[in-house]
Image 1 (cartoon, rainbow, N blue to C red):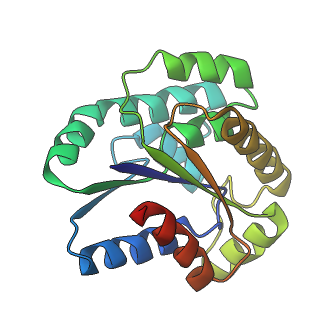
Image 2: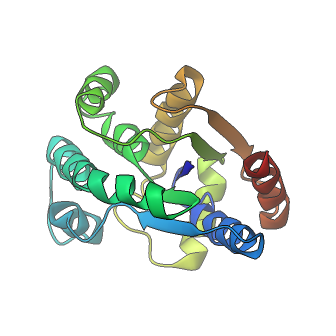
Length: 193
């Protein structure tokens, strides 16, 4: 089973992925996590760190190529592990870059990629104001994280993806304002079904 975790920066994806994998392994299941972007998305990494200014169109291409190039690895992982967990996927690229290049345009570009379709997308929905406070408490925010208006537009595009059920067997909306333990309880119960 392939499970993608999505949400704006600070919504708790990493925490929930760690909790889920620990619970699955405790239940005797195997779990493999893929985090996007990978180190292959060099332009994107430079942009996020603020060391280079890259257009949203270039970022979309860099992120998309990074994800698409991982398709063989994901396909192989589904044969070796009970659960393949994705820490961000094509949905993030659409949500983050779909404002400047156009949401419909981003959807069409994504549809043309050779990607593995997740069985479930866990969308950790959180108010951008709260997410910003969380992220600022964790670390020095990157170029995307410190732009609150941008995060609000990203959250809106995530909502549109979830409503349409874009490129997934199922979208699972989870209120990420709850405690990490409560959120984990909701996710593990759904996954174990």
